Amino acid sequence: MIDERLVQALAGIIRAGGTHQRVCLIGGQALRDLYHALQARLGEIPAVRTSEDLDLLIAIGEDPEADRALHAHLNEHWDGDANHGATYRWKVDPEVQLDLATTYAAEQSPGKAARITLRGAGRILAYRMIPSWLHAMNLIEPCHGTALRNIGLERLRHTALLISKILAVDSCLRELASDQPAAWVRRIDRDLADVLYLTDRSVRTGLWCVASTAKRPELRTELQSILQRITSAAGEPPASLAAEGRERLRTVVDGLPFWRP
Image (cartoon, rainbow, N blue to C red; front, side, top):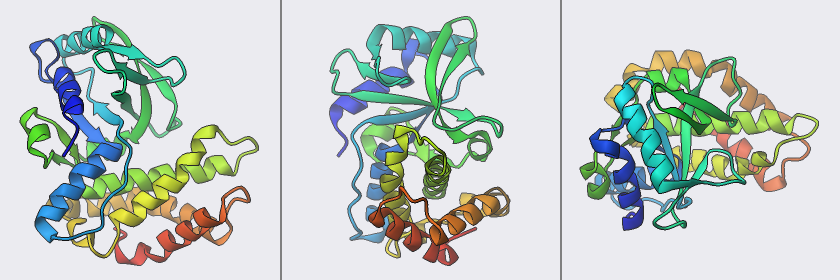
């Protein structure tokens, strides 16, 4: 079960100012919700290990009233984390942490904190975490958990969650190949573990639902060069990648024929 504090915090954002924000759950909490959905359908499957913080992708710029309400709600109920760009802590309970996410275009770098202008409201910070092409495919569905579904929260589908993790691995590998890798590349171990979980034989039947299968040709096109880079990196991994990370990377590449678009 999801922590009731997180449900309350999410409900406040989704219903900010009497609006209904378009919010999509991504990251660790989305993996938790998917786990429960797969468990209900498939029976006993491996447990998922994720963080407790929130990763939210919020659609903005479509409704000025909703944008103003979101800006006001974040200012009133959340404090920015001075050490982590677009990370917020709930004033009611600072243990509840929110990472606000936005999309990024082809020419932009993922992982960076971007300052987004909300029409008629002001600006907020959000991490560039999902490419615009993936978000445009609309591969989202209502959350499985009753508490989350009742507040109108959606999450990335199984396939979209997997693609987001593949993209994160690719970003980390490219950063590791640079002269001075950023500190966030440490997440590669967690991202590789998530890819292996989402493609595990026990859960693979949930990967290609009808909606995701319809997008399979587009996904194949978008992922072709990315999967080629990851495959090349497995053959010649960055020197700074630890032995366990190298093993996980090889396992990910070995498993590609079983799930790739």
